[in-house]
Amino acid sequence: MSELPAKKTLGRVVKRTEMPDLSKPFSSVRLAKAITSKRTGMKLTLVDVSQALNISKPTLIKIEKGDVNVQFFNVLKVMEYLGLSFSLVSDDASHHNNSAEVSDEQWY
Amino acid sequence: MSELPAKKTLGRVVKRTEMPDLSKPFSSVRLAKAITSKRTGMKLTLVDVSQALNISKPTLIKIEKGDVNVQFFNVLKVMEYLGLSFSLVSDDASHHNNSAEVSDEQWY
DNA sequence: CGTATAAGTAAACTATGGTTGACCTTTAAT
DNA sequence: ATTAAAGGTCAACCATAGTTTACTTATACG
Image (cartoon, rainbow over all chains, first blue to last red; front, top):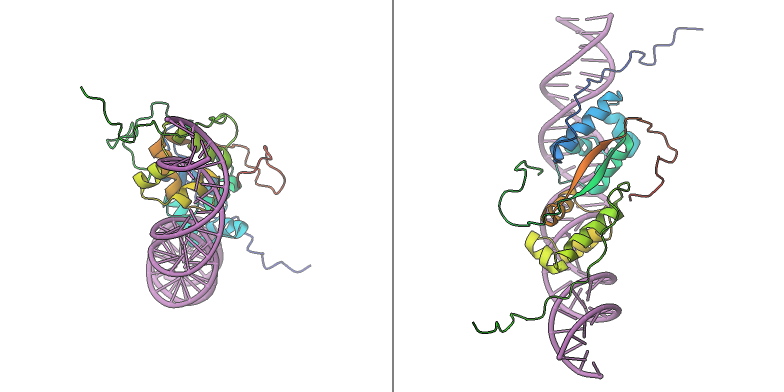
């Protein structure tokens, strides 16, 4: 047999990124970092994931940047695909005031 | 002190709904139920919340029905206002296959 | 019952998120 | 230094989520 022109042979080069501390309070940026970490850990490129889920690369990038102006549906699709999920937490001290919340980190 | 003419007097009539089991796996419907439960528990109407957050009533209703075709931003705004939040969970057994997941419940 | 308020739905319009395709930058391997 | 593939951005267009307004349906309570 002739030498396969090497389908592209070389293992992909997907730079691993570190998983954020999932025990810290939720923020869209932390979610974004977790998504990127999972994706790169699985050696998948942005195009791999966007094609698998039928979403565009720009949209995936928005999600991985923590942009919250995206469809909830798309966030959930990506999370499920990469093996990430939510758990619901209820702050039983319902203080819906205007002051700073318990954690003053930004989620938006 | 005189009796307050009762600004509209009657306590509002907001039917309480039950809080779902937050320990069960995430699904948009479970989130929706948690949101409705928190809102009614705080005796807030759909209009109260939609006005406070500058989102329309139809959109809030979509969220409280578990419709995932809404902006992630709007979901987060509602959750924060009502004292609900996410925590991130990573299924460390990254099996992104096509078969049924660990839980075959629908999140969409 | 009749009334008042909350919940939910529908239609037309507007705003904006998503897509496509091109393009540029960055990274890593040879 | 080249090259190849990944990451990232941009603009124009398209699809659809969101809004507004109005109407209908439910649920309390006098």
